[in-house]
Image (cartoon, rainbow, N blue to C red; front, side, top):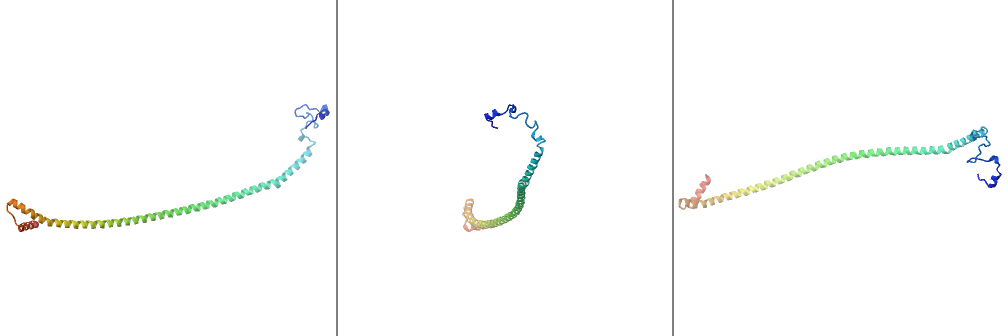
Amino acid sequence: MFVTPAYAEDVPAAAETHTETGVAHEGAHGGVFPPFDHTTYPSQVLWLVITFGLFYMLMQKVLVPRIGAILDQRHDRIARDLDEATRMKAEADAAVETYEKELSAARAKGSQIANAAREVAKAKADADRAAIEADLAQKISAAEARIAEIKAKAFADVDSIAAETVGPIVEQLTGKSVSQADIAAAVAAGKGA
């Protein structure tokens, strides 16, 4: 409280306060704590009932419905989230099942493709081997024919070479010359033996 100097002079000496709080040690109530003063007890009870009633009505009409609405919203949101999670789990399970089916089908198809490729490669290898064998057989037969031709030519030449060499050898050994008819007869006889 704001005290003017004029008011401070008008205050009687008996009401002087000697404490730091500015409250006299002995007041009008005779030193009893006001809530425990029996003279004010009925009014305190009345105000308690009025205050409690107002607080109860405030709780019942305003706070409890708001809290209830918030709890209902949370409950509904949690229920929706659980339903959504259940739905998503079912979708994920279906996706995993589909994935596993597709994976096994892809593995089976891959195995079939590998087997088909293996068979095609085997058939191609067999065909290539048969073609190479046929080519080699043809080359071998051509080579054998050429060898037989060369051999026949060589044997034909052997007679002439033998006839050419026998004449000078016999002439050198015996000192006599031999006729071509005798040389040919001797080479023919040597062939037969």
